[in-house]
Length: 258
Image (cartoon, rainbow, N blue to C red; front, top):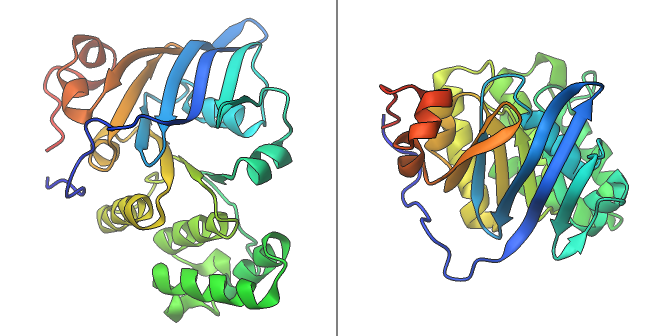
C-alpha cells in the first residue's frame, strides 16, 4: 500500500505545542476511562490516536472540546490552562474545530443550505461569508451536489460536508473522530489526501482518532497508542510498528502498514 504523504515530518525544528494534555484522568462511576494521559499536538502536525473501540479515543476529544471535564490534570491550549473554559470559549477563542464520527449537519437541508446556515453564525460579513463558502465548495469539489439534501449524500460527500462546515470558523486545530469508519477504500483514500492537504495548504494542526491502523498511519506524522486508558507507546508510524508494547497490545507481530 502506497503512503499518502509525500513526506513525513519526523522532527520539528521548532517544536511549538498548540495543545498539551498533562496527566489527564477521567472515570465514570468505578470505571477508569483515561488514566494519567499526557501527550502534545504541535503546530502544523498531524497526530493520530490509535486503539481498539472503547479505549477512550473519543473521550480524549470530548475532554479537549470541553464536553467532559476530567477529574484530574491540565489541558493547555496556546500556553493557557483551559480546564474551566466552556465549550464555546474553546471553540471561538482557541479556534478548535471538531468533526464528529456521526452527524454534524442538518439532514433535511441541501449541502449549500448547510454551509449557508453555519456561515451565518460564524461569519458576520456577508461578502466574506460568500467568499468562504465558494472557496470551500471549490476546495472540496462539491459543485455537483450543492442542491442535494444532506441525508441523500454519499458517505464521503457527507464527511466532506462536515469537514467543510468545521472550517467555516477558520480553526487552527481540527479534531477528526473516526473519519474512516464505514467508508469504502476509494473514499478513505480521498479523505486521507484531503487531510494532508489541510495540513500543507491551510497550515492546520490535525488530531485524528481511529481504530483503522493502516489508514491512520499512512497520513499522520506521529501517533500514540491507547490501551486500558493509558498511553502505552508514542512515535512515528515506523517507530510504532516496531515497538514491542504497541505490537503486544494492539498491532500484533505481523502487522505492516506499507
